[in-house]
Image: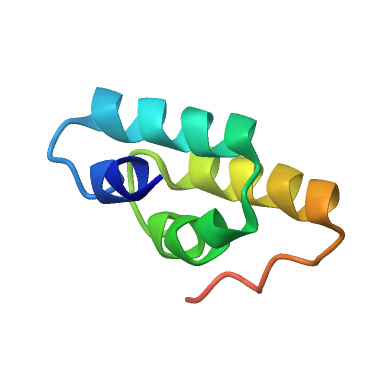
Length: 68
């Protein structure tokens, strides 16, 4: 799990997308904080936001509002 969270900061967009998808599939609530931060990424932020919403649905929480 830690390696996937670290991959969210990779210089490779493909690696970040892969990590987001994997974290979403795992659905672990520990990924919520990292995905919340990942929403700020210009290239993969929308993917992170969608993954965060799906994880939140699985665990019954609401994602935090997007920081502007």
